[in-house]
Each structure stands twice: as C-alpha cells, then as structure tokens.
Length: 377
Image 1 (cartoon, helix red, strand yellow):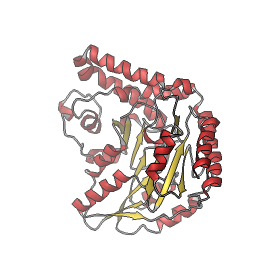
Image 2 (cartoon, one colour; image 1 turned 60 degrees about the vertical axis):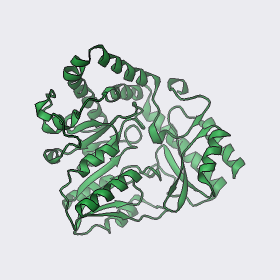
Image 3 (cartoon, helix red, strand yellow; image 1 turned 180 degrees about the vertical axis):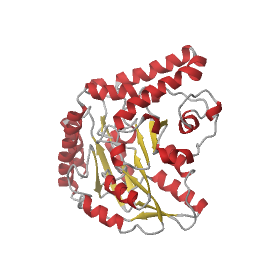
Image 4 (cartoon, helix red, strand yellow; image 1 turned 90 degrees about the vertical axis):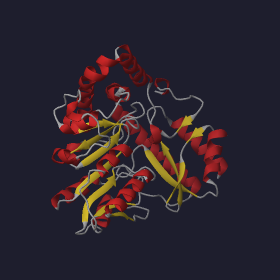
C-alpha cells in the first residue's frame, strides 16, 4: 500500500491524524477536476458544479449515513462549527456543556462567542485514566442541569485520541430537548459512522483526514428542523444565484463566493479507493497495530495509560503521556535523526505523543518508533 500514496518514502509517517495523506489516484482525480474547471470556467462554475456537487453529496451521504440534502461541503470542521455558532439561539444564562478534551481552536471559538452572547461554555473536567464508556456517560451527565441548552462533544478527540460514547449522550439529550453538536473530524473512514443512527442535531466531519480526500474537504450535517435557522457564515447570492438546490440551506451555503470545488469533488474517488482496497480489513489491521504499539511504548516510558487498550476507546490513533523536559526538542530529534514524523504536544498538564497508523503503515514502521524511543529513553 505504501506505493499507492504520495508520501516521502524516506520518512516514517505516523501522523495521519493531523492532515491525512492522499493516495495517488485520489490526488489525480483532484487535479483532473481542476483541469475540467479551467477548460470552461463559466460553464463549470455556473452550471456544471451544482450537478457535480449533488452527485458527490449523494455518495458521501450513503457513506456517512444521512440524506444528501442534509449536508454541505465545507473546507474544514473549524469553519463548520463557526457557522453553527453564529446561528445558535442561545442567550445569557444558558450553558453549553463540553469536555476538557476538545480541539483547541473550537474551545477558543465557543469561548469567544460565549463572551459575545453571554452564555457559559462549560468544559467538564475529565481526568485520566478513563475506565468504561458507561462511567464516562454517568460522569458527563451528572453535569447536565436546567441551564444546559447545547452539548458539544468530539466523537474522537484530537489530543487524546479517544472515542467518546456520543450515541448515548445524543439519545439522552433528545429526550429532554438539549441540542447536540458533534465534532467528528477524525471519524469518516476511521470508525463506523451512521449519522441517522447517532441522530445528533449537527455533525461535522473531515474527509481529508481518515478518508484521505484532498486537503480542505469536509462536510457539515444539519438536521432538517434546524436548517431554516442556519445563517450562512458568508452571505452570498443564495436563491438569487445559480444554485438550483432544493432548499435554502443548500443555496445559502454551497456557494459563498468563488472557490475551487475540486477537493470536494474528489471525495467520490476517496470513497472508491477505500471500497477497492477492503478497508474494513485495513482498519482492523491498523487498530491491532495501534494497540500492540501502545503496549510496547508503555513498556519504555512507564507512564499511566489514558484509557483501556480496547476498541471501545481506540481506533487507529493513540496518545501516550511522556515525561520530557523539552517536547519540541524531542519532536525535532525524532524527525531529523530518526526520520519519524509524529506529533508531540501539550494537553492540560501533560506532554502527549500521538501516533496513528493507516494503510501505508506496517509493523516495520512501529519497530522504527520503538527502537528510537528505546534509544532516547
């Protein structure tokens, strides 16, 4: 599988989680769409693009388990959540309940808008290690109160690499009228996703991460009942423009000024690539490699695991706490001396090393990491 990707063969790439990695055929599709646009820009951008977007939305809707008319393409989940934030009917005294494991830029966005509108953004403090999903649900739900209007959760966390039990949280929230907004940036192509089954009010996912579509391709799902109240982040032509979309939701959000839609249109090729290469087996092998590697890493660094080493909590990505004085120097050493691309960052009061495996990785890549850590530690 390594030969099917564009990655530098001299680098052991253990950071698929940050920006993904595009297979050659997907990148070729991306470039082909760019060429099609340039052959006849007027016809493409004013007529053809809407038919193409509809076709790709239909494929993506099947892939993530929702109606194609309930999702729009968007460059990244940060823009998706900011779009939702500007439309929320939430007031002074209300609370948005979240956790201390959320993505940094979105914590900043919620905090920023909370100050503008007067609501409280509450990050429930989950200390590690976690034990079970049932205990997580009980602990999180203990913080819900009469002021809770919205729950914002990661489906898979970025820093800690944990799978959260969002389906049960959504179910409980629906029963008492709390809105649920899920950040699924790391989910499509990584773990099973059926949005209709989860039944959140809002879901955003990145296609350019684990689905390995071109950079800048993500989606925003909004439950139909909330679509009329969604305000576009950028006000453009809407229904007065060329988009023949069946709803104001699509017309207001699909076109927000001139931009290259090629990354969105190549999502179909990314879905095809996975279907052609038995991706369920790929994911299974990567999950096994992730758990085995985590066990080996902990034998070297001897810190406390963040969670049990199970499929309940972990997919193809895991974070481990490391005890170092200079995390950036360690990252530099791993890249320059050992040719390993791997993220190291601060989370709360911990320094975390996060590794992720995808189709192009194998046991030899894990061995390179282990050998490097054994020398360093």
